[in-house]
Image (tube, rainbow, N blue to C red):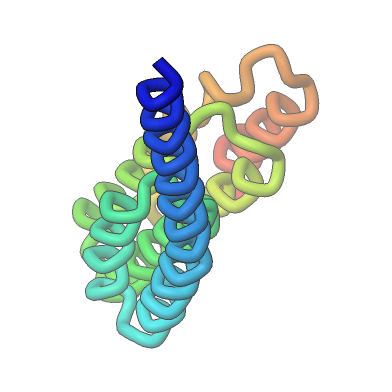
Length: 167
């Protein structure tokens, strides 16, 4: 009986020690994975907007549970905005609006005020390039994220009134 108890104790001690080694090795991998994600994210910012969009989508998919996904989503939002701006300068309204609609659709809800303000610049940019109808259509996609928030509704109303006044 003593021998059996000793063997059981040794097995238990060995399994506890093995679990601790495994736990330590997984903790060691976390900083390495975070560093790998940071390096990859930094490289993405060095490429053109159209290529950056593809790389950011891949990054978000690959590192979905990494804290860097939040700034990656914001970078994707800005990259789509930059791509749309380029398309607007070339008078390519349909693909520009498509990029902006994707940026709005891809960003997780609810929007914080800073992201809402960034997105609010999209229809203004379209409007300032002379595409009033498309700007108003884009504005309609913002209405759900402003529901029940007086400040946001005021911002939307101001843009609508500016568009109606033609200024």
